[in-house]
Image 1 (cartoon, rainbow, N blue to C red):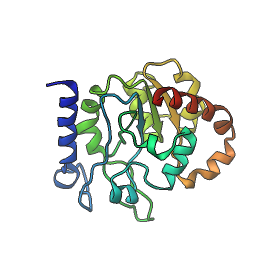
Image 2 (cartoon, rainbow, N blue to C red):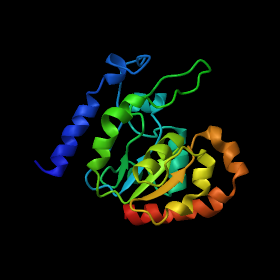
Image 3 (tube, rainbow, N blue to C red):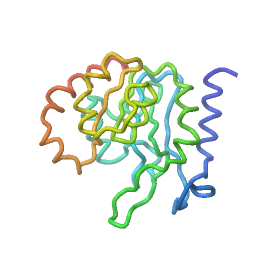
Image 4 (cartoon, rainbow, N blue to C red):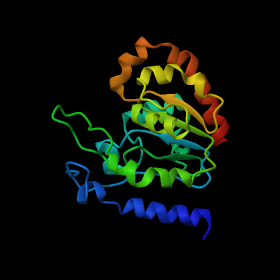
Length: 209
């Protein structure tokens, strides 16, 4: 079997996963799982995010919501390029929509995905040159995976220190979550749009052609 064959077989296993419902670490997932992960053996850019929201759970497309509109704007790509899996891969820390907490906010990514799948999945993507870590959960995992940090750091501190990861291989570009709830954060941190977004757009353009 080729590497692509092995990757497709693993994606089939992930698509059939029901661990968080049938053998969860804690409370079972309250709805039918729908893992959302889109990767290929050719994509050189990986978007590593938190977990799907309810609209993504319904459509099966990563960032198929207002957050995706903002992320595409940050990256400087159109919708066609964004969803071209041969160029851009998507692997959130939680593959399924985790449900809501008592306040109506999305719960954190389920840990079952990370424990069962992530190490195996990312080992099959050696061609990835740059990882966009979107949000704190993705930053914690990937910075530790690449030996860049051994402790959890505040999201703002990680994003502000983006230059620390510019020469790593794969390169890591940390981003806040593009949720519209973070509009206040963007206003308080104008350096993000002024300094980091131009670098992000150049990197995305280079890797997506």
